[in-house]
Length: 266
Image 1 (cartoon, helix red, strand yellow):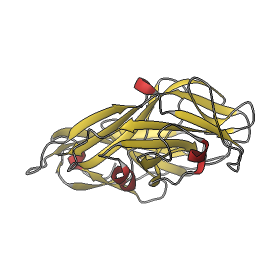
Image 2: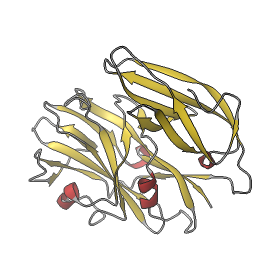
Image 3: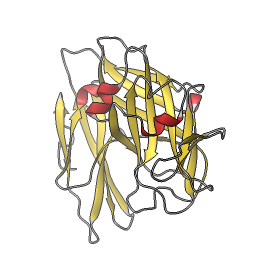
């Protein structure tokens, strides 16, 4: 971490920076706030603009985690700053569990053709044993957010059910991303047309590799925050950016095991 300095008092938008170097090359740097990934930068100089109003006033720990091409990682997370934002209401955190009756997944060919509804109990992602590729859909009733609220932060937490292989590993650089739809892609229930349905905001955040327990995405981009619906449902599509070259998949749980966390100022 190179900025801000340890023990600094900050407010508003803060420029957070880090340096990273490695003999085989740095592939990305993740920035952490209180231990959670809030941004990722894959090109030097490594930096992100942190909206400190998304957290309460007081002390918060900032960090950076660097990865190299061999999969090694190193973390510097001993920077503690004091956030002091005056004249603005304290942020409110709301958590929404997914609507299991609306959730589902689709399987299709690599080009998206022949999309069809999947019928397993949990939600599939990656390439299944049938050679089809899977995308999953989660719906949330976010109408409880105040109409005048300013959404400052959002992230999705999903829970691993089962899987086979590592769907992030092929092709190299494959990532699991989230698309956001204000409202629903088509009808509330998952249907075949949702596979390629137009999102309000695409690739708003990523979910890093995991194979057990719960995993939170990175923070939603500004476009993703704007797409959260204060008047009804918000639907998320989870998809890998590239087609796996072998049978590699995971299942995630929905309902109470899929949580959309939204931080806002009234």
